[in-house]
Length: 451
Image (cartoon, rainbow, N blue to C red; front, side, top):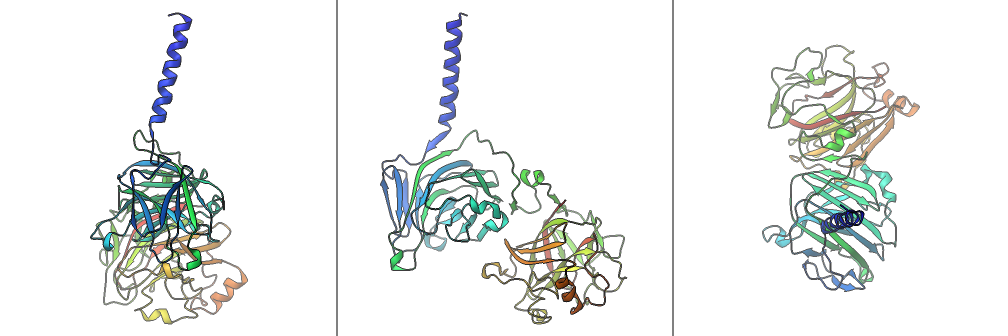
């Protein structure tokens, strides 16, 4: 083969490769009109101006959605967006509109656009369904990714159960969920409450999608919200997260003060670890269970489900050194039906309510974190190497304190734990799930050790 032919072949191969790479992207917006889109729900104004889709708010209208006529399952979506006012907006994906669901209300996953001081742009919200799945409190450094009054670039990857979002190249959210596997993509113009808020505009351009030969982006280090029970995603594994309960057996757990897992009082079924309802007093049925391992600094996650009037707790830094009487002693993340259990009114300033540091520090009450009885909720306890501790409930940090400080010692001194020397100050200890005589279920118990 001559040199000229070799160069020609190389150019042809390079051209074919580039064409193939370009063909992977499909434009969802032709820059001229709204072909391939339709409007649902509210009557906000959508129009094409200068190769941009411009959405304009209309007072008195509900949330409006410009929806693709086509459904998409696995995909990588990229687009530019810009807010010309401090208005809320969002980008729906794997979303649906069904006549039998809230009269056709568009519902499903949404990449939030939030220019407010909360700064949750790039978080994941479940529109008209479950609410927040990934508020940016899970990833606060990403709050700086969004640029006010400028064009921003969004990327959404939906591959299998993994949903990831980037804003201007910064990873903002990572959710693992399988509730909806395909649906429409939609551009939201949010409702406005005041007449003077009419006329606010949000703009979109360069909307393109890949649906074949998809390659996930490399793992990063941000927190993962995994809603598929008792599983670990690749990024969770990459970040050092592991299952503390395998979802099937009692491996790794035993009764408090005991060598074996309780023979009764606890049930492992359908991926749930449940303490059973009993007529006995606290810890007198199956009894508390503890991890065989001990932990010093850690990030613990767990999902829990309460029955009506239930009381339980997750304890940490448990040493079992106080003797075999009643529930083992340790710092406690309270689990409680605040509305129905009398313990909610005991203690001081609400420090025995849901997610509180039991009998020491009350949890912050945020309207959206109220756990419905019978629904699954997400708890999280983070114990840092410098003795700082955080309690989280459904994506919100609700307790923050530091062991060993004068304030901590003063709180212990006025509590029921005052008689225990150096209460809560063990260098390391076990994780405990409490048997308080009420039926409570756990799943997706995970841990990451912190250095």
